[in-house]
Image (cartoon, rainbow, N blue to C red; front, top):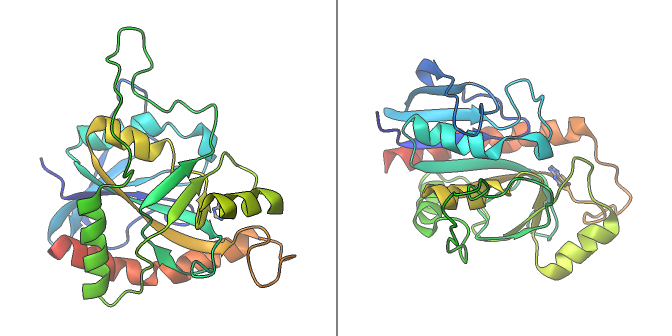
Length: 249
Ligand code: HPA
């Protein structure tokens, strides 16, 4: 059955509280099992799927996530549009903690992850267009929904995907700033590229949890997990309204 929207939750977002009449799916895909159960239910009158990217108990680090199984699993349950929630660090001044942002570009600094479905001998070689890594029409709907629901949203930006799981050095962040990155996270790739290969509409709603290393007003600030979780919880405040508006349109 068709699903209006699939939401992938990142660090600090392990469920969608507003989802009603929830059914649980545990598809086993050609690429293995997704990070955890896919919860499908009703949200603002529409069918919505939710998957916790790191697992519902946050047991998977970014480089261990089976991104292919996650996306193939969502597609198998009927999803064609994916909203990826990504917890990130903020690099540029308008992307401070608790900001929500919908980036339009990305730079991939990850390595050693399986980043394509064209991996197996004999599989079709795809060279998908990726000039605009996030689906423009879905981004436009998210931005319109945020405006409609009066949820402040930074509606542009470049997401830099790092390998992790450690946080970055100040020099790495300074380089990413010179490269043009506004946001830094560990899970944006290969997810976005794989979604494009599968023909899924895909956009990112980035939740800024902290200033990236050396990027904030106190360059010696130490990033703690508690700050990250507190800021994600605060920034998530407007997300149900934004999702309600997105699904209502
Ligand atoms: N760097 C990378 N990933 C992150 C950060 C960060 O500072 N904060 C949350 N996810």
